[in-house]
Length: 301
Image (cartoon, rainbow, N blue to C red):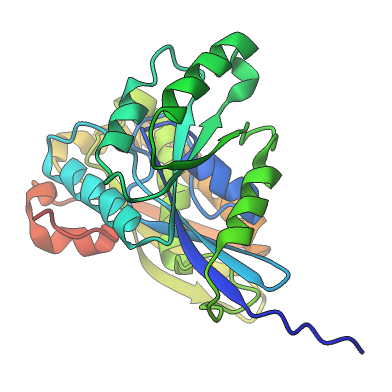
């Protein structure tokens, strides 16, 4: 029997970029499972979420982060603080760029915020939506920065070019023992993951009607001998007037949200799910530091 004497490699790779650049889509694609929710709404990702994948002797820990944007509200500042903190602590930083946008000035500005001594990797995403001549012009803009060690062209949705990016990351990880078990794909506890699944359905079904302050908290999780699970969740809003938006006429909207979230949870958990949702009002919670632990965020300094 041949022994693999190669040292283990392990490292954190922060994926940062503007809102809607496709960070969560890329990480889900690489991990091969839904570890982070996805929607067209900006600032969908609020907390730092890890996606873990392994190839041979290397364990890659991808850090999904909130989008970089001009933060004004307290919650937005907490999200932005999380993104920059992840980039400081990581072994590698991937700047994910939505190449389909007319302007990439926001991504260029993100790079300028880093020290010239910190090496960065640029991944131009959504290349399937860009003409080749435009893609060349975009690439040249990023190539001007001295701290860009590599530029990749990918489509996270179509899984085009992702393997090249992934292989490079694996090859450049530091020699270090694995930090997570071989079968673990995320650090997000099931209760928090389930809350994110429900929030995803809120975003999809309510879109612009959804109050920005809304979040979901799993209050109980009970598994039964027949292999099913009962989950109770609170949908938290900041004002009493927002409650009716989520409940809908005769409770129609919250029923639709509950059904879609339940089906999604059952699919990924591979067990029957009984989901119970209710709406709770916590006045002005965004300005209370004690509220942020439920979101996996630190109150902004």
